[in-house]
Length: 398
Image (cartoon, rainbow, N blue to C red; front, side, top):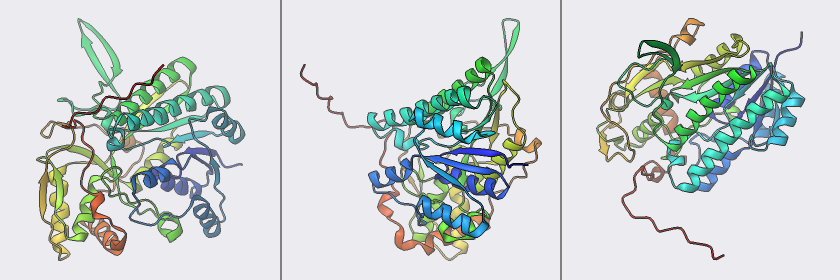
């Protein structure tokens, strides 16, 4: 029996690379489609992963050398519809895993240009994927990476994608209201609407994985060779809060909390990310079904997270001081936050909780690559509501 063919869009990225290796090792026939734009955005903004990242060709060759398994690579942008269709038609995938999006809220808030680029990359790319599925692989199962950030922080429990509403004596199950906090998160809301529409209208099958903030670099596959190393972003654009704290701790710098630190978010280990993708693939949606899984394992406030990193850092003989900065974002810092995440657990997910050992490992990793850290890139530079007046755009003479 031939292994199931999987097309992974965005397989060069943080979640996509770890998932590609996991699925290849699990016996899937993996093809990666990626524009390599994430690497270009690093060059554009003077950023770099803390851990050196090999070229895509080097990564794939090393994986083949170690395992004897082949991962094919197509250097294609999902916004390039003819070439996207060509790859889908040639691959004939049983499933498509879609990671291929600009995933940074600060990137999308830099200026109009970055907001527009985020929307073109994410919204147009997602729409192209749906049309390519409809016309070339209508039976394929689409597993799409969403974000818990679509929901915002409502003063009610966050359900998994849908909520039952009673109004004027009538009842209906409707998509959960969304309160996105950036132009990036707005694109994810649009993606969800597109998926739901395509499933209702064309009978496609899709699983929307609303993922929390992912941390860690270690999976069994990634750890098998330095050439397979995954990204570790700590900068003010693509870096995540735990990575930033661990790098600051390794440098002996204060851990910088935005505002009071009451912002509560959902988190999960990268090892759980790849397991969640595999679970979704092994339990596909039915024809015409659009389903949503909230993909996270724990919830912490930023202040709680800083406290945990500080305690671990002190245990390693580091300072672990915590400092508070003015919050560059427009967000509530004290709020109710309780989210449901039962679907993946019911299908077999056994969560990997954030441990002091994991935090210590990230601090040690940062210390190991200390010479690659540019501390100037950590402090926030992108403000959601700039204080300075902006110059008017120049008019072009007719």
